[in-house]
Length: 107
Image (cartoon, rainbow, N blue to C red; front, side, top):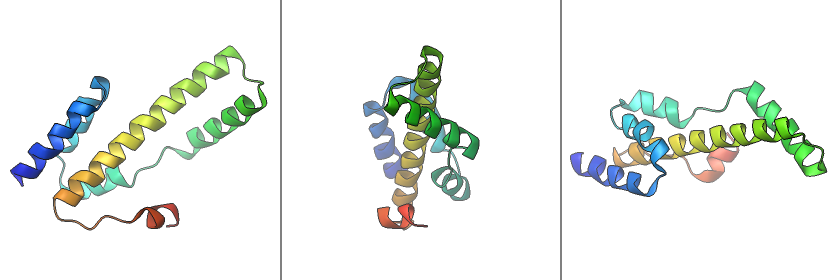
C-alpha cells in the first residue's frame, strides 16, 4: 500500500503546483471518500452556466466579463477532472476495479 501511495505521489510532480496539495490530500481519504470524489460532478447550475457561455463563445458574442467567467469555470472544471482522475488512480492502486470510460460516459 505504501508503495502505491508513493508511486501516486510521484505523479504529483507532473501536476501544476497549485493543484498538488489538494490532490495529495486525497491520499489520506478512505475508500468511500475517494469513491465520492471520483464520482463527483460540477454542480448543475455551473454546468448550465458554462454551457451557455460556451455557446456564446462559439458565436463570438462573449463580453469581456463573460470571458472571465468562462475562464474561471474552465479552471474549476479542470481542477475537478484532475481531482476525479487522481481519486480513480488511488482507488485502482488500492485494488478496486474502476469503471471503463464507456461506463463513465453512459452510466
